[in-house]
Length: 132
Image (tube, rainbow, N blue to C red; front, side, top):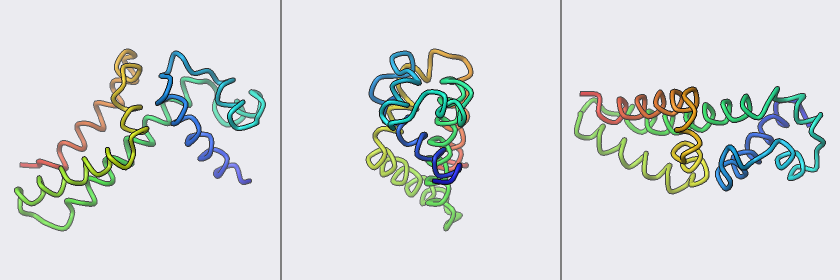
């Protein structure tokens, strides 16, 4: 497996772990074991649990904003943009429950850096939905 593919796989497995147990109740060992990896191998991809979590927040936040932005890009009518944006947002939430839980559970709000990342993506999604 390529480095990029393994990194993506780690993000996917981490999403499941962090969304189910939260940041503080999930260890790098939990993630490594669920992938049948050793912790040293996991640390070859991410320096720390914090760096993994930060990248995961950015990854799922970018997915959300990308979906909303894509949905509103075909129109300049503010009402239609808002409608399309809201539909895209709630469709994303429905189809990505783990990612939604990750972004909006308490672990993402307690730490200032985590909260700043989430706020950045919330603001970007809101601007895409209602630009007027």
